[in-house]
Length: 413
Image 1 (cartoon, rainbow, N blue to C red):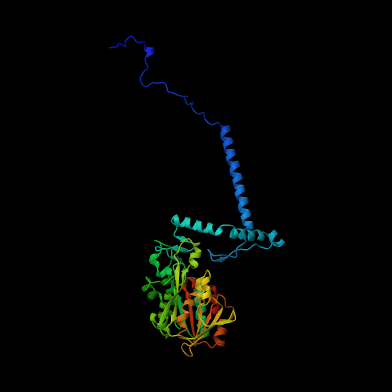
Image 2 (cartoon, rainbow, N blue to C red; image 1 turned 180 degrees about the horizontal axis):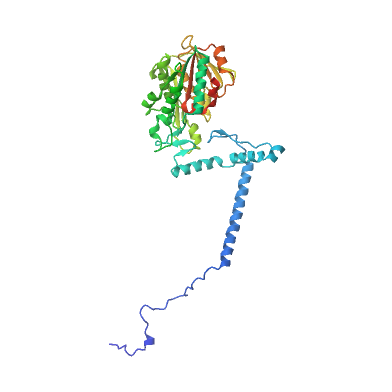
């Protein structure tokens, strides 16, 4: 056996202390203040260059991009480049107009708005521009109105209208919106007010000589049906028909049944006003269904503002537009005169908002003539029209939201 006791201690290597191979890594010296300053200087310099290049590119794209007249996403007319005038330049008005123009016309604006809206929804926001994203993905316009002085003035105007025309039978239909009828689809604790209570407020102040048509109960009873568009604030043809049947009960009209009409799909890709309000970020496409009576009646629709006549309440060309709801009477007009082979010697003055457009196909079955007036665009004296046309029956039809917002109703008095 080999004896190692005589080995020198310098000849032995302690365990765990083997000399590392290769170059030993030197500890890193702390970064000096001068080095940090130089690093930050480079960062800001390159960042500034990138920003200037991006800004220059963006400006060039804006200059080369032709200004758009309308925004399909927002469904509105866009600001155009203002004309430079010395007076406006020095007053500051030109600068304000130009800023609005730049804001409306910058390149990629519509995509940016849609991205921003999608991001807000992703972060849990349930209300965009007064529109709720409902549980089924339906878009529902907010109603948070409380009746007050303005409401009283409108009620007084309607009462005055009846007082000035005492022999005229007058009915009022304030249609509920999806916010009331489909309230079960609203986000939890959505800040809305009751349309039913608003309706009751009007009822308690309206002259007893005026018939106020309540469609809330029948619409609520049918709330599971397709009464309102998913992407638009209007009711569908079905919603208009159900409301019409309730109106017919109180105004001696032919109620009929759904089987009296052929239901035809005019469009299956309608995206309405609420789709525009949320910048196209949400909302399933809608069907526009039109009701064509099995029993054909002849009619002539005269557009006074366009000085033309057509033989239909429907306009197929409107289905190629952004607002396909204009398939009903080509949208809103100051005054229409509709003559039909409906009930003989029965005439109606219809004072309305756009909710009435899709009810007209049912109303014409009962009248030989309907004069349709939209006070928002009609500038003449409505009381003079009643006398000139010898009107003895009138219907005021608004959705309750528009009724609250529209000051033109005051023109009735």
